[in-house]
Length: 285
Length: 299
Image (cartoon, rainbow over all chains, first blue to last red; front, side, top):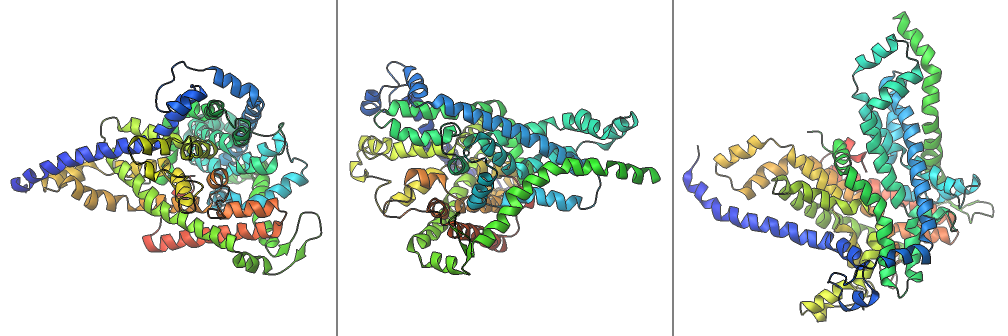
């Protein structure tokens, strides 16, 4: 039974808790999010403003900084490389993992469970530990310093996570849909291409989003497996900006902001999918 | 029945065909690499001359090297601060948002945002902020009258490692999101009942929320520690291991070996990194109970 005495006593605490929780949220936002806003704002300032009034809004918004960043550093080329690598690696990854997921989720065959475990266990391994073998493989295949080398490496690295997301999606599709389709004379390939793959589209899109963000942001293997302008990606470019923009902070910040646009844009449109994809596996009641 | 077996026979070649591309890539990029670093860790090889087996020499040389020992130690500091700073912070924020405060979805979206930005961009941003001459941090300290605390954050022996770790572990997005999802799945009726019994907000969090999401917290902790052990970008770009080799981590040490054509030592470092990960994670699970295996599959 409720005891009114106790109920009365938690009111001041409730008040303090309320203030405390808003304080925590705003302090955290100030530390984690403010720097990103500051970076974006600084990218629109002159170098003089960045030094003399680092916290005020730009007097005149300097869009010129972005044009400078693209032309001076040759960022456009690195941007193109990153787009090619991230898009093709993601599409290829989705194609092969949706094929394998279809079989794992919808067919019965010996070692099915073993194959699934084998295909998803890779997420537990720190991929960075494979520096030596990846370098050997890519060099031996004659793909060192090529976009194709990065495309293959990235689409392989993302297999476990994509397999996990896509196959769990495909498993949840009701069997009846497929049975009736087979009755209507659908071939094996058509069951994949016309029924299961379209129905699993939300899962495939989620996996694709993760893959794209990974590929766009990847640094270690881009660093290790490429050496020239023709194959380097934006993440490597950011690192070299530091020397190119030694005195031009505005240019450096503009360049960094440009490299963040694709993943932030994807996040703005897809954040619900990304967050639910993140939590789907982590919480089972 | 007969129809069923006929069908499976007919489909065998398709099944194999559909599994083939993934199998080939997994073999080349996961199976072969594991075997490769295992074998190479017992050898000396510079990539050109023939491979020579040297037994456990790589390992004894690694542990005899003070920079390597610093790297392992630093990785453990990273892991410890992930467990004592990053995850508790994620937990506090998640529990606040789980009470569905005004605009909690917006906060969730906002706090996760840095997770889609590259570690490279974040490292360069923090490097600019830590800059002793133009950096915002020293600037801010000056504004609030604490000039005496201003320093060369990444250049001084005592502040370099904490400064690098802080710039990474302030981003709790992923852990916050999974803990929040766990907390949101707790039935609201439990809180209502507790309220009737006179439990205050803090008591509710301690006696209802925390025990209910224990599994998710352990999962978040395990992942946070696992990520801390595979660190590379943040250190490489912010200090490159300096000052005076104070800040290297295993990933950076491995990269240096690789760049110096000591492939055997690099492979041995890779093996030790995996072993350390397995050791720490099974240790955590022994102490805190099992995590949800499915959660480990999501990076």
